[in-house]
Length: 224
Image (cartoon, rainbow, N blue to C red; front, side):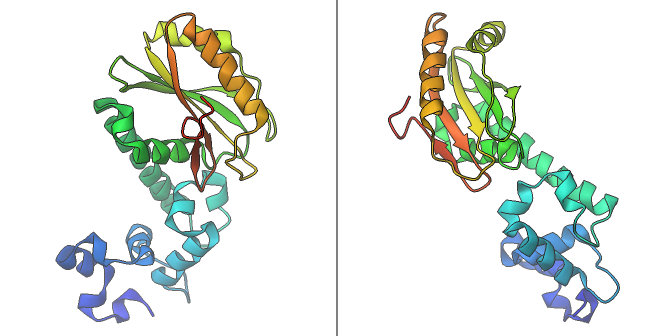
């Protein structure tokens, strides 16, 4: 059924304006962004197809541009709008983490790291550099590798921390294979970085292992 065929009070735009965004389903929210469907396929059906293809809104938000091209009906304009929403989400979370201590909102930290790293097909090692009040100074992807391995150089992390006048850091890397369980190599790397940064009075507060589905805190596991 097309949106025009729905009763006025059941159309996504009207529902949002009269009852609030919370009254809309995931497909209805996405349909508002997509605006139009295909010949023989309404925008609500297209929106549901996109959600099914990427595992819901969470999966869609962690999707990168090339994957969106696989969906018939997502032309350049629609893909650009979806990617813009993703970037807005990243920037909003970044501003939130810059304005208050990082661990006042641990859920936001996880969301932020998943948005930054969760969809990457190759392994990336990143660092969140923090000030004396544990607010975010910068998030930087420092090393990139293959799906299975990344070479991380503690000296470069130390130099960057000093240049940013960071007092603490949160480490993060993704596991493209899908498991957020830290490996023994992750534990060894964490301790190596912790020792190197301690020499310049920079604390390692946590090390997150990130997938599209979750961000696992090594500190919560007693591994930092």
